[in-house]
Amino acid sequence: MDHTIKIDSVTGLARNWGRFDNYTVTHGRKDGTQQTVSREVYDHGSAAAVLMYAPATGDVILTRQFRLPPHLNGDPAWLIEAPAGLLDGEVPAVAARREATEETGYEPEHLQFLFNVYMSPGSLTEKCACFLAEYTPGQKVNEGGGLAEEGEDIEVFELGLDGALAMIGSGEICDAKTILMLQALQLRLK
Picture 1 (cartoon, rainbow, N blue to C red):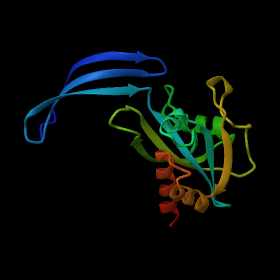
Picture 2 (cartoon, one colour):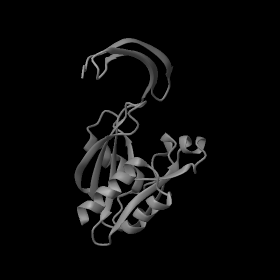
Picture 3 (cartoon, rainbow, N blue to C red):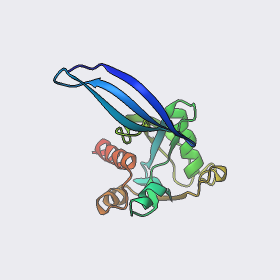
Picture 4 (cartoon, rainbow, N blue to C red):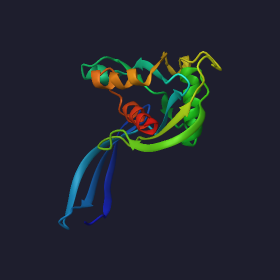
């Protein structure tokens, strides 16, 4: 396969929270020929997420917050997710700790890197570094709920891992990174 890639042009479409650009790109095909395509790409930066687990109780901490895109697709706008956020110039582990503490009020313990995942590689540049951490129930360092100045209004709740896994099957949890991290935790505990 010819792996050459040439960016022929970039046209800026929008600059707001992130960058939205139209790219014209020529790339090699598996038959050795070249192909030129046009693709729109949204770049708002990469992110980090952390699933927090209490080994003593078997509980996980999840959040629920407003997400416009699911609503636009006809789904519930209040999505259940593991704490996550943009890197904001930090290394992923630092961002994961910051986001977990801001959103849940708990300081993650024993942070372990799980994997990197592209959230929607056909149109987004976002790569999410996913982590697993422990927490101790009842030992909050702040109220959590996110940052009001960022428009965050986050509900925090704890539930058993089995209950969270059942919520994947029922469709109550449909966030990709959260599903992957819950399944990764389940595999580690077997």
